[in-house]
Image (cartoon, rainbow, N blue to C red; front, side, top):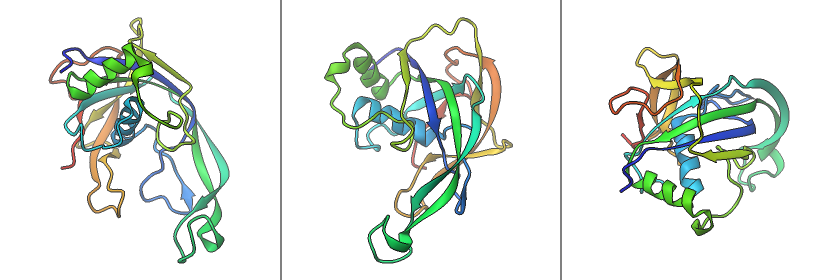
Length: 208
């Protein structure tokens, strides 16, 4: 098991983290949910079973506040029994987009950290397919840097906060939504550095 914290830098030119209750106008969260960041890390190492690394502790911060844009795109939903994306299951909708997202991610020592360390040292040994995205396949990663030097920079950290104004999922139920797990968060400005062991910036990914 890896005994060191893994950290990396990401940039994503265009992305959207659709709010769970958004229907006609697809609003985006201002920060990627923990479930999305966890999914990205699994994709990075080529892991398809998201249950394997339950209990992973991660932390992350925005290095900037991305600009918002609105696009008109074709979306699909299930209205009739015809295949998705066809007929009345296909329609245009407005969707908010985040432009120029930059962030840092930290993963606490553990089995996923061990696998990430292996991927950083031997990227050709990773067996995966498709583009590397932060969320939907459209949200492609532009830059990924392992173990960057933060040079005393500050960022906006996502922090567990019962009084926070950001309800975000740490686990998503993809069949319905009854088992989706939400937590309350807020953003806090602080230095870009590995959080201490008991720091509230650490978020545990679990199903309950």
